[in-house]
Image (cartoon, rainbow, N blue to C red):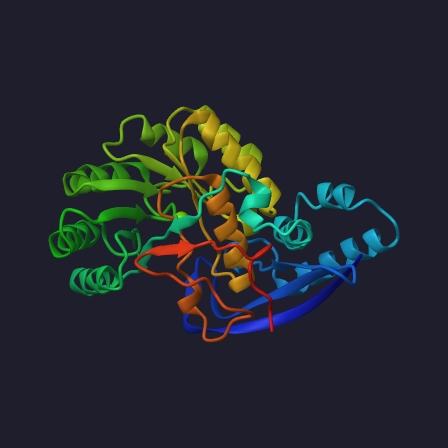
Length: 342
Ligand SMILES: [Mg+2]
């Protein structure tokens, strides 16, 4: 069994800005695990502004971890020690899971959970922009077959966001599911005001209206709209704590930032225990990361639409991204991730 690492850079169609970085190229590391007969793939894709480390730092940590395994240490022990570098862990555990699934001839989703779904619903994302621009983008998504739209909020003034939601609802009609994601941008009183104002438009849930598990849970106790946790719950322990508050309705799980498919499935099992469904999403990963998230989504059995429609943001990719037809991805019967890079 041998690991190999290939750095990659994938230009974005439109550069995007996070809290403290502008990202024009998605940089990461493709990890392969092979034994001469079977091969498995994972990726390490830290996102500047979102994760504490960048691709260069991840590369150093990854190569050190691989050297430990090659020196004879047990992979599970090395993975345990990568708790503080979940993106690196995700690449190694992802490659190991894909390898094991291919060796058994099973799609990764089936390997992760025998009762995995055959299809996965996905949502469209509408970024910032004027109320009319957002509504036009929503209409375009509907025409492409999506029936769930997530709107990014919290960048414009609260009044503008309220108008954006109103315009979106009147444009796409009553049957489309609308979700909001504020990425923790609001303070508690702004969040309460906006959520109270948009509740009439039938919002399925709002991700991260305020920042932090406790702040979201406090708001959740009186919010007219169900609340979801995303970046405030990075680890399985965070997810357990958030669900333990009893005020979180939906949990967003990013296999890349949680440390890989095994830990993502641990979080999925917690959501089942607490009856708060998971939504599995990418971090604008390459097709390898998107497919890892896809298989976790299928293994979760959750019927909510998942956040996997991000491949169109990249001008190139490491492999074929999943095909989305009418807002749905079909898993198929190919073993592992179902795709080979290159
Ligand atoms: Mg989010």
